[in-house]
Each structure stands twice: as C-alpha cells, then as structure tokens.
Image (cartoon, rainbow, N blue to C red; front, side, top):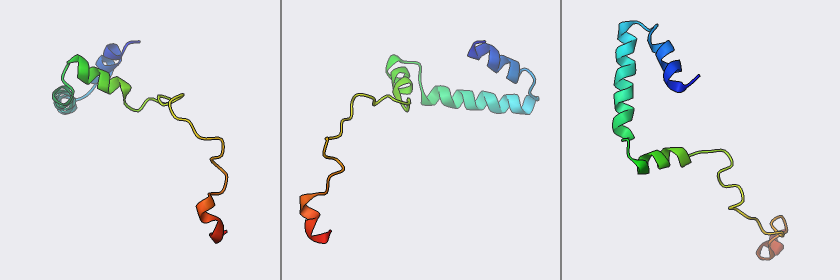
Length: 73
C-alpha cells in the first residue's frame, strides 16, 4: 500500500475538525520543506540508521591508557 492511499484511508474517516487540523499541518510541512531537489535530498539524508557506517574509524589503541594520565592511575 502506498503512502497516499494509507493517508487517504485515515483522513476520510476523520471528523471535519480533525481534517482541518491535518490540512493545516500538511500546509505547514509544505512551507517548511518546499518541493525543490535540495530540500528533498536534505530530508532523505537526515537520521538514517547506519548512515555513518564506514566513515568513522577508531585507532587500535583506543582503549589503552593515556600517557598523560599515568600519574593519576
């Protein structure tokens, strides 16, 4: 089922007052994220699980004690 159909099935059964709220929220989202390619790319790249995979590396001695702190240990 595509998103448009799922939204339609939910909205069609709402009372008029809630349909108005949904409309206002949709208009807000449309203003906040205009339909240009740059905004769409920004939406698609934000917060995806694993999006930093392979881009962050830790050194092999990450868990080793630091030399600067030897007098405190």
